[in-house]
Length: 431
Image (cartoon, rainbow, N blue to C red; front, side, top):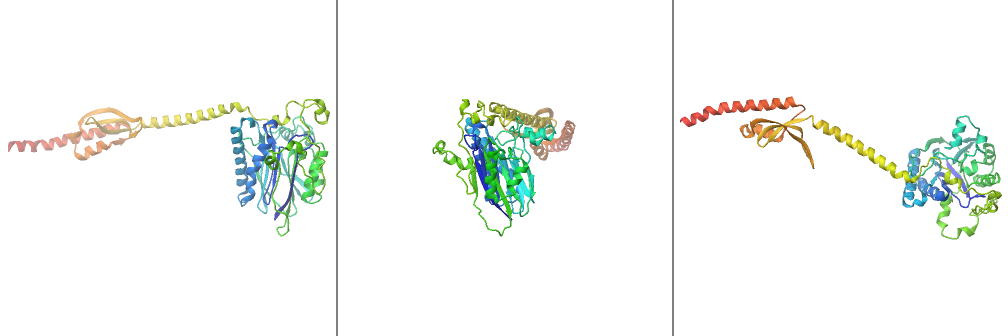
């Protein structure tokens, strides 16, 4: 099987710019919703899509491994951008990714963008939101309907930000011919309930459904960017367009050098009709200039949308703590090795005398691994050549008693040698 897809992204009726990014290709569907307001969520979402879209050029094997790897590459790249430009501090993005191998979807999900599956006329939500209101729903404190008007409905708990550890949801979905997939940002699923989504997805082809979803979201009062990707699962023999589609900030950023402010809507229309988009509303503190005549909040809600982000100024403290832990572990390991060496002994030579050393018979630059512990009255020259060689190389032991026994044996051998050589010396003197 293969995918017949369509993708559309619209700045919406209120936002000044589009911070959503989307990609649809033969093997890959991905939606990213940038978070951060003035911190340029459009850069975060387009950067993530830039990393994720590479999956479409690879053989879709080990679906979950490839998806997880791409998400972590996006995470790392956003972290690099923030390090290079402190003005991007606070930026992050959601990500909902579907990698298709012909029969199965490998899904990766972070944030509150969503993926749905329509099968046999029944709609199933594949992903679970990482949001504050979702935790309230899970605890039974509010309903799905109440979550749509909750004052903290836009507060997400997970995002790709290049700072926090990334823990995406990863799972697989088996597909059938005739299935229809929807990936969308919260600009759509935040205002359209399951019933409305189902009604739209049941009608027309993928192209029509994508445009109708955006139009319906704007009519329902969405104040956010709206991005929808619709894909039909069809038999491989069917004909269709397989050109990848790039939408939203990922498609717009390369053109930012031109006079975008005077161009109005970036949506260029569609054969199914206009989406009903209005001109972006300029930001202003004047009530007359605010959306729908309501005075604008001096703090962009997007700047506070990702709840768990700590101030960037504490990043150095985290690195310092990690370094301190590593140094501590190395110190404990070194102390353990040193303690072990001080329980070892060997018999060696010191100033021509057989000596017991404490430590190990080894050398490290700048570190003495042993020191003389007990000196005997046995001179090295009085031993046999074999024993001299052994002592010069060092005879190692695991305890002091064994080392002392060896010195006693060497002393006994020395006495035996003197006893056997003395008569021969006298005989030679007498003759």
